[in-house]
Image (cartoon, rainbow, N blue to C red):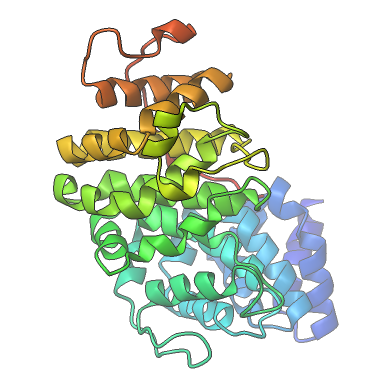
Length: 362
């Protein structure tokens, strides 16, 4: 069987289009079960797959699927992510409004962004794309692509719902988190509409929540930067935490941001625990890194009541402990304030956030 697979891999660079397509199609299952077959002969099959991304659409589709599946291998990831020519191929194709495989390209970018070398997207110069954006850096073009194309407006073949994962990994770098938060309005606000409601695709919600969290975590001078972000971020962070017909008192309702004061039975709390954990962690980072001004602002905007009701209504221990950590900062050690009455236990932060693990797409 091994020799047959080796022969099949050899056909990836065959001169006949039909043979290349059959070879790529039949190799897709093995990209999950035997990814090592693409690392033979000094990564020659990988080089072939990079070229096939520019082949006819059906062949490129199979090549991209294989690359997505095998790019969790560190050696392959390094070869793909550090190849400037291949990166330009991906960027040129994904920003083409007629690209049929744009969603697969965004999935591949999400995997490649796990490489620290991808921080160069912040400064990587590209010619403007007239149909998309006057921006001249790769990162800004991808932000514009997401903003204009997330609902199929730019490319009818794509929704680009995996791009927030790219932004989330890039936001771990201070220079990029600064870039996302210093314009007016902050570029980060382009993602905020896609954190809620739960009916939106999970990659949109989880990627957006992770991007916000990582931005808050890596921002330099957070005590200055975070308070200025609160008016932009807080309504979007609190809304997914609120359930239908929230049982707030009139006084608590009056404290909330205006757009959250009249939520009725149609309001939905986030249903995916991973998203809830990222959002609660983001709220904690606002409080922990934003200083007294941030704590005061969140408290005066009804943050305590929202966290209290989430703590009561969610069974996940990670979410509940996150709520408790937030309340400890909100109440500033005031006696009698906290969530002990709900049966929760106060816990310290333990370990890394879930989004720091590799997000598996396939």
